[in-house]
Length: 23
Image (cartoon, rainbow, N blue to C red; front, top):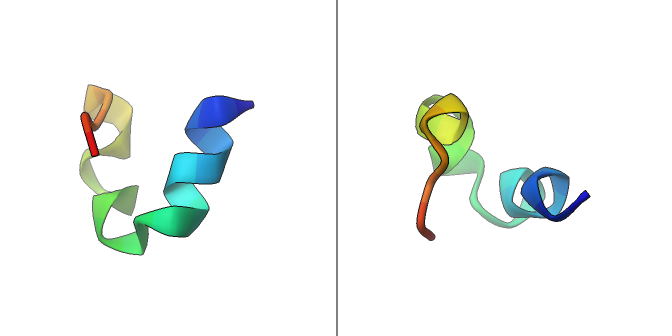
């Protein structure tokens, strides 16, 4: 569920989100 939260906090990481963003 943490990964989902990052997607909302960092919309720019939505693309590389599959590559496990460290942001």
